[in-house]
Image 1 (cartoon, rainbow, N blue to C red):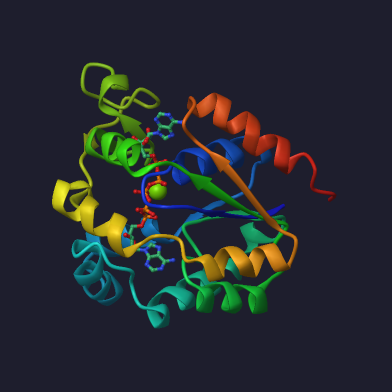
Image 2: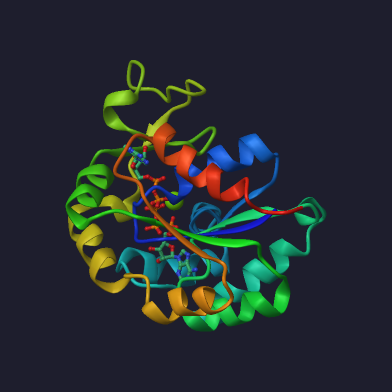
Length: 208
Ligand code: AP5
Ligand code: MG
């Protein structure tokens, strides 16, 4: 099962990707996570990407496409994967179609007001990478694994604003997948579990 999750910043892509990967036992590939790991490790890629991420902008294609290409060549992607946050522009969608054939492109949508509300209260677990809402922490620690949590640098109010302006999903990406008959759209206004039911009903229609 090869799935692409599209959608604006903070719409719940990572949350739904985690649920899909747990149920279907496939790897979760988040370009944002790969950049953050590189930033934390001080790599050359991380140094370049940081500049763009801190400004709420997209990282240029010449850096982004290559990391996905390399990641999809790894053995654990043979039986499928969930790509979270890639592609974001038409050139990335076209590049991906040359690497592999995906089964569905699911857009997780949410209105800006709720995105701001969720991102301003999001905490990330250092141990398991789980994104969670401030209110769900247990004594200030990750409710899933008990790990220490932190606030993402790009969840600062001014950066959230820039991400929402600069990172709307372009219509030509939607059209790319519509033309292939692979596009689906759901809204994540309801709970994570209710949203996952919608996602999973789409996945259950995929013929293996
Ligand atoms: P990335 O890390 O992908 O950030 P993003 O797209 O802005 O999305 P987020 O991770 O912030 O949100 P999400 O949709 O995963 O939501 P989540 O599940 O956490 O990318 C970071 C940066 O890297 C980008 O800004 C860009 O600069 C760069 N980049 C990455 N990919 C790139 C690409 N392809 N090309 C160029 N540049 C790229 O949920 C958010 C919060 O809501 C959480 O607290 C969660 O607990 C909560 N929540 C989720 N679902 C629900 C629900 N149903 N009900 C209530 N709360 C919920
Ligand atoms: Mg995410």
